[in-house]
Every structure is written in structure tokens, then in C-alpha cells.
Length: 82
Image 1 (cartoon, rainbow, N blue to C red):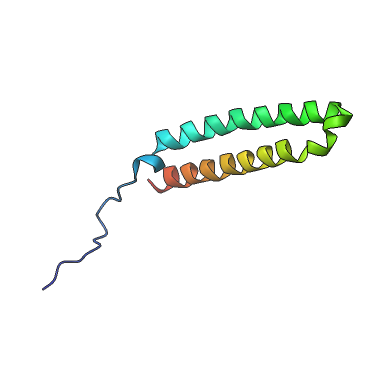
Image 2: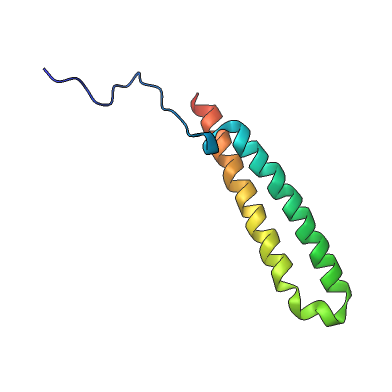
């Protein structure tokens, strides 16, 4: 009789970069990047010479906001499953 390779009682081991602490550090660093990008949007929006370059801080704010939401949802799902 062979042993079951994936028994249901085995706890999954999460890698260090996917631990709760690493996810919270990522969230807080991306919040800082988001605030920096919002500052860039305000500065670029106030100066007509920089108005053509407003796409970059908008892209940075969008990507960091998306990453914050995605990692927060991952943590929330992990907490609900435990």
C-alpha cells in the first residue's frame, strides 16, 4: 500500500516572500509609492510644461494601488482560511 503524497492534514509551507510580515511590508511600501505618485500628479498637473508627462505618475499610482489591493486580498483570504 502506497502512502498518500498529499494528505489533507499536511500544513502548507509558505515561502518567506509570501509570509504575512513580508506582505504587510510590501503593502506599506506601496502605500508610500502611491503617495509619492499622487504628489507627482499634483506637481505635473500644476505646471503646464510638465502636463505631457503626467502619464508616468498616473501609471505609478495605478500599479502601486493595484498591488496594494491584490496583496491585501491575498492576506484577507489567507486569514479567512485559517
